[in-house]
Image (cartoon, rainbow, N blue to C red; front, side):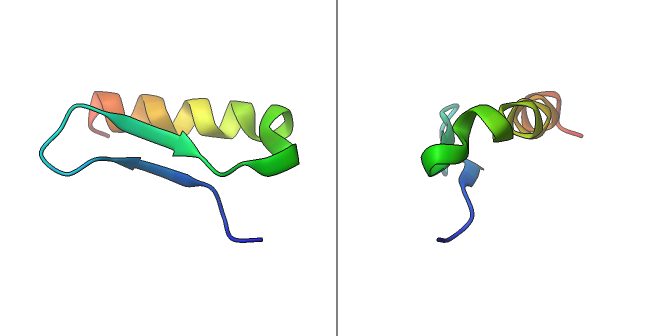
Length: 42
């Protein structure tokens, strides 16, 4: 299976965090870190 999608939509303030399949709970901490980094711009 491909990796999850964690990205900002072009020209938008919408962030996507999708495609985790059955591993959503296991990947939640890493997803939260990636989303926080995107929001804070780091």
